[in-house]
Image (cartoon, rainbow, N blue to C red; front, top):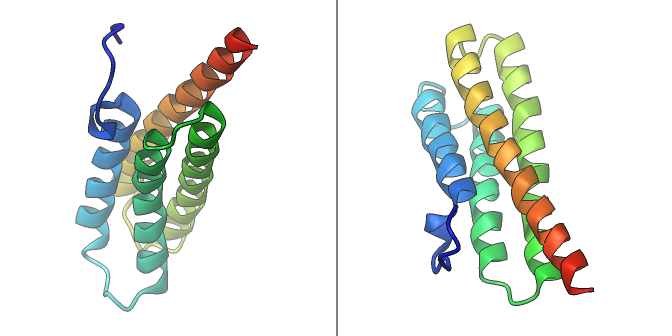
Length: 126
């Protein structure tokens, strides 16, 4: 990433990767009935990741930003658990599980980096 100031949450690599994950979740889980509780919870967790990244981006203080990015990370871990349940109960195929797992791990890796960068920035300002 360059030193250019990011002016929209949609420009964050973390949000972009997490958005790809959300879209893939909706595509794959669309095969399940709308009434399926695991489908609903999985979709909510995925949306929560990108929503918390967006909300954190809009916050003023580093501490507020970090709080929402940590919330996004929690939703990402919740989503990973739901993917395991869906795989083990055969609600999604092994192939779909692999695809979503890779996307979710990439999203988590970027979230960890974003949180770490805020921690480092806070420590540099102390």
